[in-house]
Image 1 (cartoon, one colour):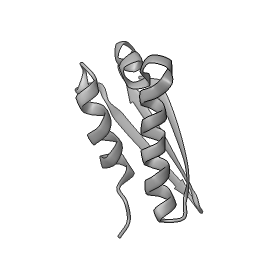
Image 2 (cartoon, helix red, strand yellow):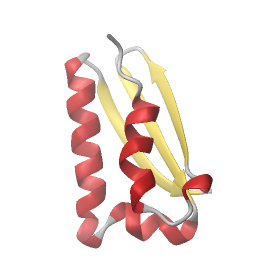
Image 3 (cartoon, one colour):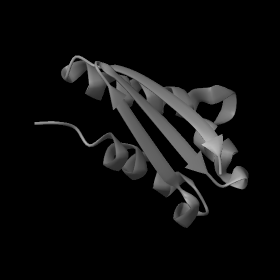
Image 4 (tube, one colour):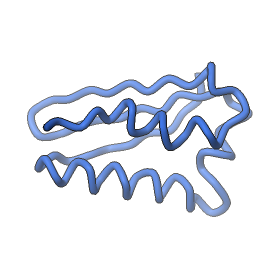
Length: 81
């Protein structure tokens, strides 16, 4: 069973932000590396990153755990549209 990283990230991030329609998740897979780009409205970046980066760290931890289940290295980038 393969993990849909896009759905995983959207389900975690969309409740946190004000403009969920602007949220885009781009997943690129090559060999054992998965790069996940979270693109959101600039005004929502603080909500995704959180105070001291705690929310971003939690998002990354969950993505890493999901990736390790499949033996993949995960990289999560957060940016604005």
